[in-house]
Image (cartoon, rainbow, N blue to C red):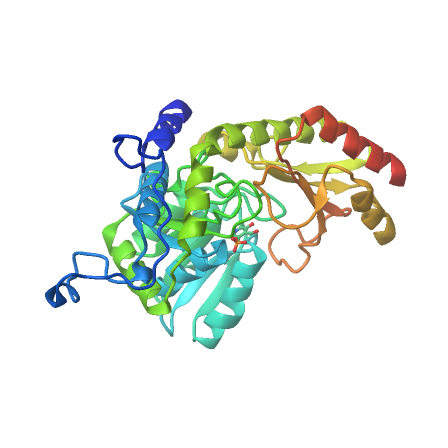
Length: 384
Ligand SMILES: Cc1ncc(COP(=O)(O)O)c(C=O)c1O
């Protein structure tokens, strides 16, 4: 089990240059496409960086921190969270394969599987997020990959990860999880046997809503090697400036995460008591259907959750969102500022396709919890 204090210490001290006479605390950003060599014989060496696309010392430091966070064998960095999902997926699948995807997946992941992979000759079967050990029944001879996300996007279902991993390992199927919600701070999927853990680092690690980034952390060398090769062929390089911003965010991610997590949980528990709210979709809330699984596998929550409001007209749902003053209207989460969106997961087949009212997702930032509460209170009063 992870220890916040140990991690916070490591994130303060790892990935820094050695102290000298007046050296900066952090590595400088080096912008480069061409790297120069003194001798022609060094141009084709495999043991040194040869070109800008191969990263910089800042990229190396950032990858080292992600590997430490997840307890993996290595990390690959990508220019966005989506690229950190699609790159490793492409390194595992080939035409003729079959993959299993949770029905609660982030929309663009689903779209990628159902369009790009389909055109490539890869078949996708959606599974219910609560499938557990029964996933064994969906594994075919051609199944190469199971794509997990826990909690699920928008509706926050929790998987029984150990049961799914056990079924996958029995049939030599790779597992990949989108671990963005937990930041790898409140869930350690590689320690539960998952092969690849992916982060949209755009969220908590960026922390300031001004940089796109992604990371995939690998539990074993064979997946890492294949994904590195794919990333190389796809030209998946990321800017050193962006890598620097994410490394900077890493230094303070634990206290920010813990404050945002506490705010989200307090708001979720308060919203449970409101007559205007039918359901609170947050796995750390006691009457959530997957609360027991969450308690078993997670050490905390995230900053993001949803509520199902009492029935409202479409206009009133928009009015509710518009009336919020402290929650910006925008996608994403993990930044210092709170956000809210109305959303509709109805295209799903195995979960959340019969919600009894409008769904609103809140991302909690670093504002005071009581101010956020007052803000929601006044917006609810405007429509109910
Ligand atoms: C769960 C999840 N995974 C992946 C992504 C994609 O990350 P990015 O926006 O950095 O491409 C997001 C973005 O919202 C997300 O919420």
